[in-house]
Amino acid sequence: MYVERLKKDFKILNHNFFISHGGIHGLCEETGEEIKENSFEAIKLSILNDIPFECDIRNTKDSIPVLSHDNNILLDDGSEIKISKYKYQELVEIMKDKAPVLLEDVLKENNGRVPCLIDAKEANFLLYSQYRKNLAKILNYYAKIGEVALQSFNPIFMLVMRSHLKNILTLQLICRAQTVLSVFKAPKSLASIYEKIVSFVCFIARTDAINMENHSDKKWKFSTRVFHSDEFFNTVEEIFDTLNRGSDKAQYFLVKIVHELTRKPVLAFTIRSDEDFNAIEGNLISNYIVDFSHLGVNGYIEKIKKFKV
Image (tube, rainbow, N blue to C red; front, side, top):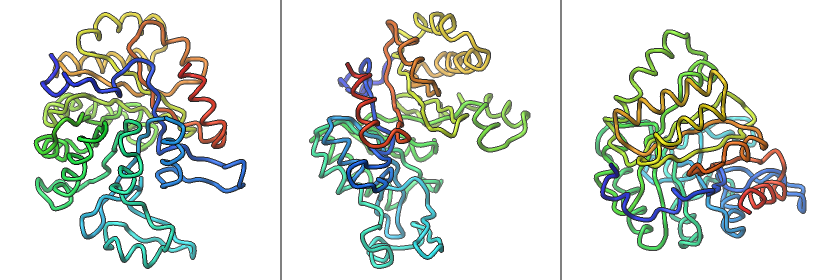
């Protein structure tokens, strides 16, 4: 059964919905410059082309949410600084116009034009902090203007944030065992343990939905499939038949277990080639987060618009 907040019509849960990963980034053919993911330029390009975006956030020393996937930032002189060790104005003084953009500025630029998905990379397990309060204030204010969703790998973070958010979709991020093996170079025994505790993590978070992420490929061409609770069991057999691969069977079997234990909608991440997008779509309720930055900015936009047709 859906929790109460899922009665709202979230566009992110719609069929055939495409979201840019970190905004539209890659080589800009017109200027010859590289537009970086999570930059103001990448997000603005996504908005101007009517493409929803996903972005990553970190917290500064003074508890301000800024866009960045990593806490460590490489400076022009080759040295590194940690975002969490500096106040935002200090980052601006050090990095000038290359300082990470404020989440608040990105949402202000969007102004409700496209849905956005915020991936909080916060790793602090303290239950309450000024950063969480600041983030909740920003998101709750924006939710009156446009659609925004929040996700994180940290179940304690999501548990606390969920209690402070209104009209905002919350998602618990998890990764399948294969990711633990391939990305984190973990032994098979650890991956097996990880699979067993996944549903417990989701239970702790008590989020509205679950994102299962698979990073077995460094090309970063991946998709997200959304399964609504009442449709999940009707589609899982079709998925098994369509994706007849051992790793896929293991992944979707785990998704099915998580769903059975939590009774929540599941967003299942998996990496596919372009052709597979069409092969699996069928009658499934599907949603994709995609990254085609290797095609350049124009190619990225054209590819998403092609799939949206």
